[in-house]
Length: 126
View 1 (cartoon, one colour):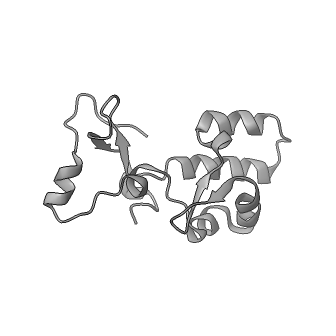
View 2: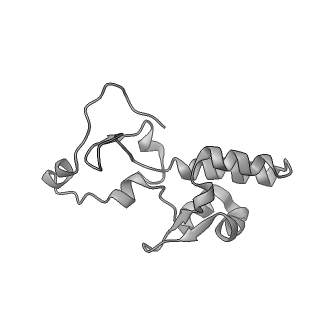
């Protein structure tokens, strides 16, 4: 994930001006639903639901707090056997973490956002 530097940020008010409700959680947090889990993990989706995500208040899921960054996921799987299933789940968790549309600008207090590189290829964008 990334953004251009320097770049002009997008402000929540700009979404409103275009008739789009700005939903921080939906745009800036990983988009995880049953369909996304099935698409990414296939037969391992149930294991992922049981071990790596928790239900959220929006009818989807969020990552366990201890596995919410790619570094945390990498460290976790470094301790496990290097099986094909573990590699598939590790890569899938990396994909979930990056399944966002916007990145919040540093020190912006939730007022500046940037579209992430490749956002149009995410299931969140679809």
